[in-house]
Length: 134
Image (cartoon, rainbow, N blue to C red; front, side, top):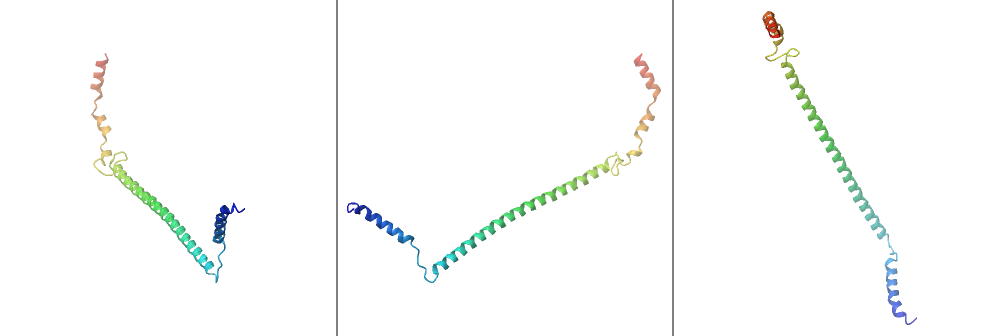
């Protein structure tokens, strides 16, 4: 055993040092416990504030996207309204209903078809067709 003492003595010293290191510290007056509690409360306070910050950031992001969507929808509604107004102005100028405004508003009074029909003289036309066909 004496021969192994040269090897076991340093190992024993390391083991004894480690045992002293992990040996519970005697807490007189609860100072260490109080310090641990304060550290725990401070740490939990930091975590709570961090979670609140993350939550508020997410809420803010959601509000920003909602506001953007509402703005886009309002813009689309205004564009649609403008297109409807322009379309109505164009419709009011076209003679299909008859036109309510513009230079074509009295077109329905002109009687274009009747005027064209009355100017056509059927007899010369009939003679010209017969001549061509014979």
